[in-house]
Amino acid sequence: MVSLVRTISTNITTDQHALLALKHHITYDPANLLAKNWSTNTSICTWIGVTCGVRHHRVTVLNISFFDLGGTIPPQLGNLSFLQLLDIGNNSFSGSLPDELAQLRRLKLFNLMFNSFHVEIPSWIGSLSKLQHLFLNNNNLVGTIPLSLGNLSSLRVLDLGFNQLSGTIPSSIYQISSLERLDLSYNQLSDSFPSINFNLPSLQDIRFGSNSLAGGLPSDIFNYLPNLKMLHLSDNMFGGPIPSTISKCQKLQILSLSINNFTGYIPKEIGNMTMLKELYLGINKLNEYGSEGIVSVRGDVYSFGILLMETFTRKKPTDNMFEGGMSLKCWVKEAFPNSIPKVADTNLLGGENFTATEDCISSILELAVDCSVDSPERRLDITNVLTTLANIRTRFQKSVASRNDKFSLLGQACLVAVMLV
Image (cartoon, rainbow, N blue to C red; front, side):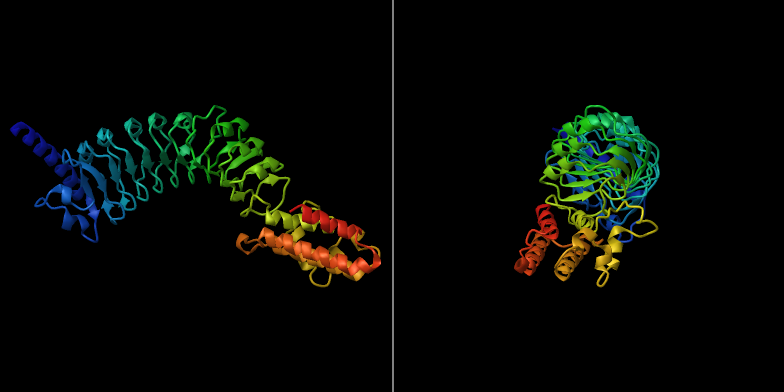
């Protein structure tokens, strides 16, 4: 019994020395949080930010996030051998990440986010076999992503975003079957999606935006992402067609592919993705038109506005006349209120009831402009668009009813427009 007490006392002393070493490495503590609370006169288990296990009274949690601290990490911190959660996020720590931290074999959460570490990611992190959450985002980390991170077979969240990482993405990361979130955004990575079978059945969130990633999207990768809810690849150099197989990700809610070099048509299968809430495709080389914005799966209000303009002007946004800053939308907008006949399709203006016809086209093009405003929040709801368009058609039909002209070319065009919603 005496031996056991001595062992526990020794271990607690070891933990105390490790924490005091950290305290001595703090160079900035304006609120004196550690100076006031980390005292040798009290048990370390009562210190602010420290939690001990019930059984062994060893430190299991060190959470000093948002303490507004500055300093460096001492090697003695690796002696907290029972530590399961290490969170020093949202402070101003800098310096190196000591190799001794590799001794934290029980660690499940390692959070260094929002600090000032300007070092390479150490390869020893890959030896923390029980790690489930790794947050290294929003630092100044440099170098490449260590291959050893692929050894973290229990990892659920890997966030390396907002650093200065370069090179390629280790293919082994795509084999971590437990991974739920993978964020490598806002780095300097230059790579392409590998043509391998992903083993990511649990992955819900992929964020690779704002890198220098290139190449096409292999059509088969979407067969292995059944639970994907967010795919953010914007601001890269991806090219080629958008694979129609992306529709196999039926749980996808946010799809962001803007600011790339994608070509071809927007796959019609995207319309079958009933969970999709936001779709960003702007600034590509697609055969569809419209600026980047939030899109409903029931119909892109912006694109529908452009479609109305095309239908009733017989012009396309890609026509040669729309150069030098002029666009189809601007051209139509500038025609209000007195020059609608100049932009309307002349085939729709012929015949009787010129005034009623002009009024109808004017109302439809005004609706089209309202649908295609730049701010998604200011665009009309698709239900209101449908109701307004149906009312315009009804008014036109009533105005020509006395002449038995209900099925004029314009009336049919209105009907087609309503059916397209």
